[in-house]
Length: 207
Ligand code: SF4
Ligand code: SF4
Image 1 (tube, rainbow, N blue to C red):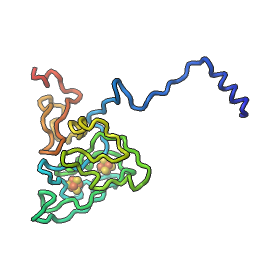
Image 2 (image 1 turned 180 degrees about the horizontal axis):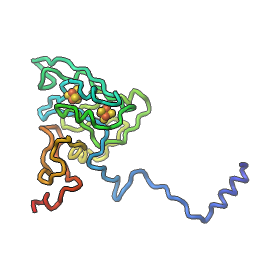
Image 3 (image 1 turned 180 degrees about the vertical axis):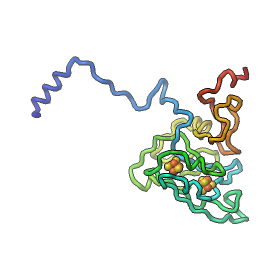
Image 4 (image 1 turned 45 degrees about the vertical axis):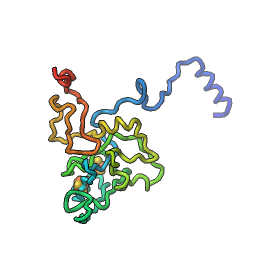
């Protein structure tokens, strides 16, 4: 098509109702709320005293269908342990070029060390950045996730309040009696849940 043909297309479209391009992920007053159980970027959790929950058992790596977790455990130094057990996760890596966010690693973990947050807005520009190391996955002293330059965590207060998007299959999910209760063992920043679908707001108020 020559440039005159291009002009013809333009004139033919004049006056027609055009499709409007909307801003990305905007709802009323900002970004839409994410679904309660959205599976996003992982975090490695710690106990409230700061000890790491990961004991380096490699069950998460063994169950991962995408084979994207690499763990190496090591013995704790009894005089300066990293985790409460004999072993800790010395190396922990997740390759996000392969992860399918199935949450099987979370299900397999015996200590609730690995959970998935709701963060899905993380776009890297090279392969190295896609491989998250333990230093990047471990929550900080306040129980908040490390914020990497290419991640958009949005409101961190909201993240801290309700970040573990997943509930263990054996948890009392759906039972209104458990609204607002700590669902995870003493964990930095994560554990109190908002009501889910099927849980009654009236019951939340004690009616
Ligand atoms: S969410 Fe699934 S694919 Fe991703 S690391 Fe865990 S087990 Fe592997
Ligand atoms: S995250 Fe959990 S399953 Fe994976 S190595 Fe650590 S303790 Fe084991």
